[in-house]
Length: 436
Image (tube, rainbow, N blue to C red; front, side, top):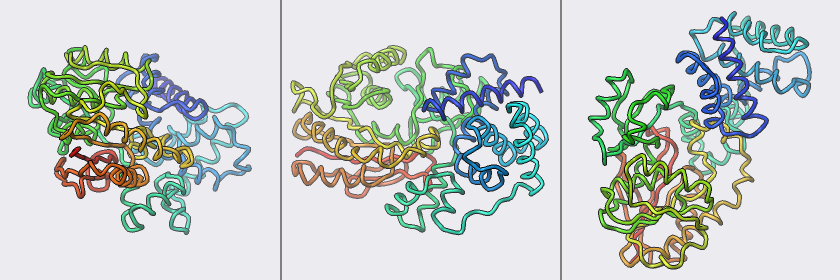
């Protein structure tokens, strides 16, 4: 049991960093996995515990607070995280015996809280791990899927009560790891053969013609082909940005908010690495990541520079054949991969539509006559998507929507929201225009 205890300690430390220091789950987890010498099975256990615990926090707290023999406010943060992690094992990890989950939780707990943790978890098992959801509909959805009430209300407001629960359920569904094939170096079929030969369960994406999907627990540093630049990580829906944009060899393309660079790379690969591609970002320190990855991928046409998306680079106005306008957003479409995002208050993203519109208006200035632009986000809130696009079209009558088909779906009025209740992908929005 020593290795298992080690794995749980590592997982608890990661969860504590996410909870107290506000670190992103993927970054905190990646750092921990690199620092600790864990077996492949323990790496999988740590990954499952971190994502499963953070993702289900609201549900677990509802159970803990309903069963606690002390006031919920008196439960220490670390003790609460240990209970959450144990509940995830009891409810969602069938291969772990209940007594093992409880014993390991007690071992992690401080001396003064051991009795409390032991009693609560054993009581939960005696109840056959059953609990009653709230009667109020929105609270029920909130607890069932661990999505804050205010976010549930926003999704219901945008998509209606009948569909909202399916969307929220889809957002919480853990998906595989998506790779974008670098077709400058290898075909998708060749990469699939290479991955299968290395023992990975790999399949072609049903949404993206460039995509490959692996199991969610696949360790990035063990997937063959990274150093050779045969692939990079990118969600299937996000991969479609360059497909929708359809850049051609020899064209000038501008990516307004490029970091971490996936959309720039996809456009460059689609162009056959022939032409000009400007990758701009507000944060200079992030641009080196694009440059380093571009070198690994064998992409030479990317030029990086610091630029505020709201003001742009005036010397390039009126010169671009294609523009990628992937704006900063609330990120609610990717909570399956970054579960902590779901707990952000809606007020934190209240000013985003104003910023998104300002960036989009500047992006329009880059376009030459006949130039094409794609506006995209990784959220599903209409105030950041359709409403921004409609305001942009009102302010710029020279823009005309262009309908597109991608991922087996077709747009309406040049817009489409990829939603996880009907497609196996993150929540993602894209709109396409031509400058007339």
